[in-house]
Image (tube, rainbow, N blue to C red):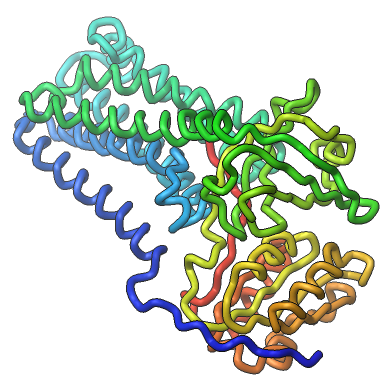
Length: 446
């Protein structure tokens, strides 16, 4: 198609937001790791090397547990720069690190004390639980974390519904409280000096406050302020519907094209279920829209929502936005219903854009008429790519043919995981620099 190009828009030089966000998290973790090491040394060493190792692994398990809370708090500053999917991935690996550190802490402490007594390890553990305040609470906390770790393995997650996994995972907050009270009661380093005690109270207080603010206070305040409700439900085809919402002061809702919310539609049978759906139109300060393909009972039920239904929304979340632009021009690649955030981004992005929508058949091209009109209005190129998965119609050669200067553009990608993985491989083969590739997977934690 013939298009009228917009003049290039220069991107601002400087450090990328993602780098700033990651550096902030690394700095927080490393600075606290150094402080913990200093307090550990100041507290003095036990004569038994195993007990020394046990105390050290316990301290770093506590630090990583507090860091876990920061990762799962969904604080907007970090989420906009890093993305919930990457924060969730770090949360996952940090969680397994906590579990291994706590197991090492328990083993080293029990073996260390057993070596100084006449008891075998099992009886030594029983003796510690009966005679040392806080040890029994620590054992319960460790048991909870072992269960949470078991259900968080990939094989277990595939077999569990998200709601079931989430319910089990909530008990980790109980484990956090039990572990903290154990540290207060039995932690040598915790009580080694007033400064050390103040540090640990501050660390745990800040971590818990971040969860309270990000997961409870901020969502409640935003929903009380904006009072979202459904205004219309419009079928796009047999499997896809668009839900329109309005509310108060939506011009003050800090949502951007490309982001998503966790939506709870407050009907009697679905109020408890939260689903992540992207905005399918750029926020205009008056309305919000999401477009959803039927993939289960929850998404299928949206077709039957009534106008006036109240909505509780957590968010906005996601780093799939124009904040991360590095080049004046862009390529927007969508697979199937993954076109929803792509369509919203096209409204907000400046510079020349090439939009590629990959679907099995033309009938699967959700929002195609809107996308065509929007592309025409913004001087963008639109390519509808149809056909079965094999042969790959977004292979390196095909992408280079559609977008000859793809290495000079930002690439935004959204679609089903197999399609995204294939396109990411094509982009790597074409030599598109990693900082220019933007994608996000829906991945929730805690």
